[in-house]
Length: 149
Image 1 (tube, helix red, strand yellow):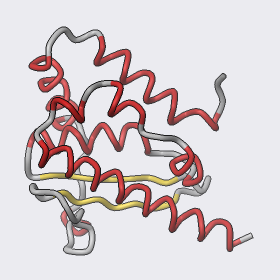
Image 2: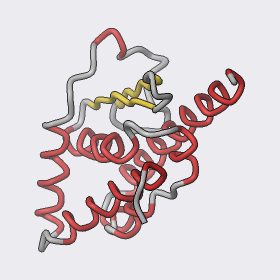
Image 3: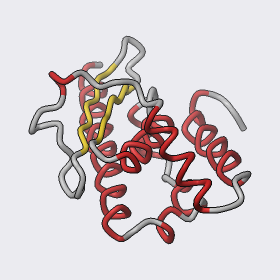
């Protein structure tokens, strides 16, 4: 079952496979941090009060736009290394993607990989806040695309 509709699921499956190959949570934390270090830089001009994700203990910024194919592109950053890695994983899964696909695909990889049980409650809440922000972007863009036609 592949195709553009399942690109988000394919990305999730790929991450699940990658993280399941790591033997310990220490190795998983290291991999998450690696993702953060490889996250493309976010322009300082986009790091505004409006782009801050509410509900995160660390500072997290997220900005989304639509490309010419009406796919949502997300750029993000954080001032905390592990959190930057978590937001990098979300960007990897959800960008680029059609807003409707973002809304229709559950973030199953978070539960499957045990993030909710192995992150501190504050980080888990922050992760959910980041995900909620992505869903809000997708809702707004989906509305915009639908009303353009």
